[in-house]
Length: 250
Image (spheres, rainbow, N blue to C red):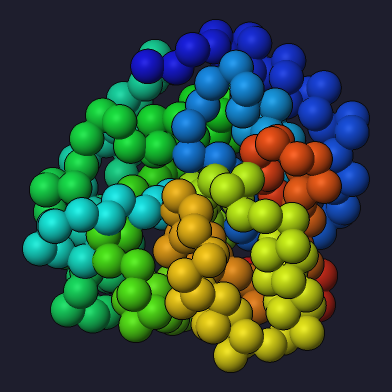
């Protein structure tokens, strides 16, 4: 259950927008903390302030849910998701397209629960956007093969659509040194380096699979990354990726 009212979220997002160096370019990807609480709410507000004035048909919310689940990339079978702010319809067409894309995508409720980060993201989306559908996707296997498969499927299917990707990940679990190295690899278009970082045992964070999936897609689309909090020890990090080099929507 959301800890904040819609007015409180709206006011925090508005204040964050005054400090957020957003550009006029469209935002395609958000990196948001996994858990909403009084310590992380401003990071949520910072990320979602990048969406003010935007319009999206569909929001894909990807999060890591590792465990012993049989399905590697399950999507809940729900027709809609409910929060205190109302119901959000599920994009069933996109869900079926992903299932047709590869054998690791399944409509399956095994990994679904009310504790998903999905329910922390939706109140912010409902506050800053209107008339959108959503797709919830869990990553139960963070192996490089599955992450690359997910990134390839999402970037191919969504490249020309008016869709936003939200990746739930606690980047604050990374040391500043590791985070800076990963951002440097991204800026240098060093994909093999990013893969090595993803597979490194000392890159340990909640939502690692979601984070690197977002990076791989952003690199494919040549997006500019903006992050808040990486130089503030102990502060949750959130950010977004803007289209700057080429039009994505067709």
